[in-house]
Length: 318
Image 1 (cartoon, rainbow, N blue to C red):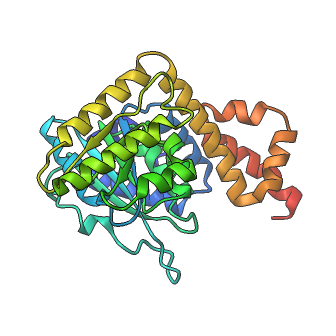
Image 2 (spheres, rainbow, N blue to C red):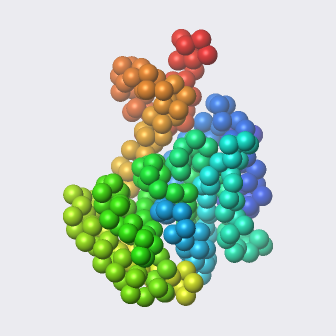
């Protein structure tokens, strides 16, 4: 391992400043072989529970993230938050800056928050965000990934986290819209936010439960998707949500489901990096080359892409 990146044990002990420097280097040196090697090392030592929060704008994801941070810290766990914000069309940078909306203690070394731009991913996860997740999940006890909106983000999120939480706002009719869009097949937990709205929240939870009962999957790996009502304002239901998160992670980690899920994620990362740089033609070339690239991507997605790209670029004159 190059001296450009610290050993993972040193990174875990190095505090927020060193972690921030490493994440910045990942973005500025994304195409380096040493970056790929470092990321694969991190990907192979994932220890965190990784939660993804998604839902429409205004549903209260940031407030819920804030409540989850406090719950993790109260349990003595370190937590990292990766907030995916909309991108500026001028600078490409993050517009909202979730760090300004989270009420964290800057002096608390057990909390790390980073905002990243969605770039052109329509609320999904950019390559830089995936790289950050690979690092954060081997450094902290808990990782929370908050996406900016609805649509492509759910599919992307499913390929990057262990547990997907879909947030639904009372009185919005979201559950019916999500059922039509097939989104109900993606979450592992559904959280009805703003539970302090009382009857509206209870009605929304009932609607969601009905929508889930009509879903073809109703959960994966033998897991039944729970619905909970949560209020970030009063903190009611937060313990229930964190309990569902703990139980889901324990459920998939009890056998080989988590290991298989992460191998599948790594292959998806490789394919997405190929698609981003070379388009669908690049994916076809990877498929035509046989299963070697995809097999190696299960354990070394970043080095596999680096090697594949190095072979393909000269052929394309890039």
